[in-house]
Amino acid sequence: MIIETHGLYKTYGRVEAIRDVNLRVPAGAVFALIGPNGAGKSTTLRLLMNILAPDRGEIRVLDTRSTALAPRHFQQIGYVSESQRVPQRLSIAQYFDYLRSLYPTWDRELERELLRQFDLPPARRLKHLSHGMRMKTLLIAALAFRPRLLVLDEPLSGLDPLVRDEVVNGLLQQAHDTTIVISSHELSEIESFTTHVAFMQDGQLLLQEAIEDLQARFRSVLVRLSAVKQLPSPLPRGWLSPEIAGHQLQFVTSAFEGERELHQTLAGHFGAVTVATEGMSLRSIANALMQDHRRRRS
Image (cartoon, rainbow, N blue to C red):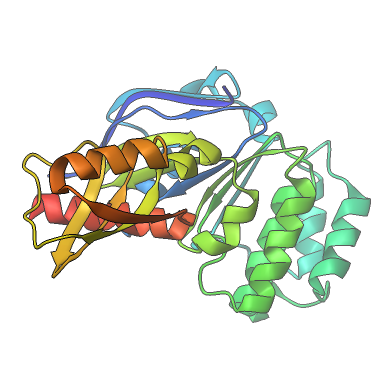
């Protein structure tokens, strides 16, 4: 594992930002950390980068305890955050000149290629960059030394569609060489290249698995009932936010094992039914998890 955490806790005063987070990121993954605002994603990433110190728990990055990370380790780690500070007085070219001296593996040709691809003016001062140009500059700064690990905290936030596409294409070019951990609300943009997903809510890690496994077990289900029915109590395993309106039942199952098994479960509760299922996007799965969590809390 390129990242592992065990029993990770972080509090701010009386607010528990994250609790008992056990994260495992395999080498070579594109690992999406998703969840609503305030779920603890940014706090988790800052703990991984040693920007924050945990109150409890252990973090290992590049097979090294986070507290023991040395300059040679950080020379293998790229980090981009939408709130990241940059030296405003420098131009893009001067900023890269400065960074180049810090990273022995800096690739000048890759830097030039990404500058052309992102259409950035090297002479422009950082303080005069638009938000999109600033994020592209930060991404080049994190990619040009070909890191083993790239950590991205909301890199697509506030970008227009064209700039998002450019940033995603830049990431795709490097994904085969680098383990990427990305926190983003732009789930439709990252789904195509994500290999693993972790979902956080209220400071807890509720799931983490390969995206293929996640999408295989989630289905949107629409059931036509032969008569008006009541929901079974307790609900069958994996049913999320079921609703009956007239003769129609709609829910999401997170434990899909096949059409036959699902039909047998429904027939056992409702008798004769007609069933239609549909696969779900990463965004739809995240929305279903958030809605179900909100319903359980209310």
